[in-house]
Length: 121
Image 1 (cartoon, rainbow, N blue to C red):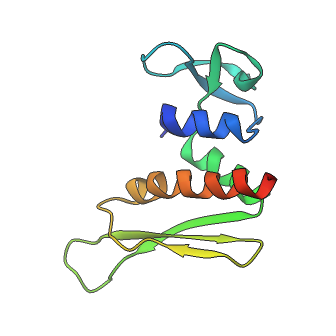
Image 2: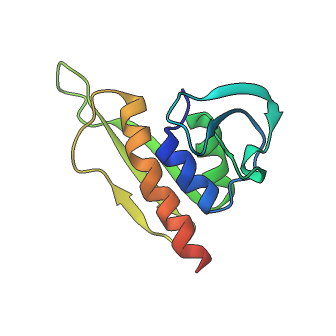
């Protein structure tokens, strides 16, 4: 699954430069497009659209660790929560459960990216 356009924009602002095979157009609302893997953030009109996994892997390389785990194993309809840890020993946990793992990951990415932005000064 790709990150949303909103998350892709945040990633571009904090220097995401890892080649990927998807991008959004800066001035269009259409879904992402695929091309040969490259750093689309180097373009003025395109925004790299990495997968959630690629984004998480990049965050790890920046000292921000995000993971998702069951919220409460004892409930019939399993819910998920996220945790963000940083190299500066900051820990952020979600307070509300999410219905899917991908929803929990998607919810924590803007928070993790915000940490990267503020870490840069």
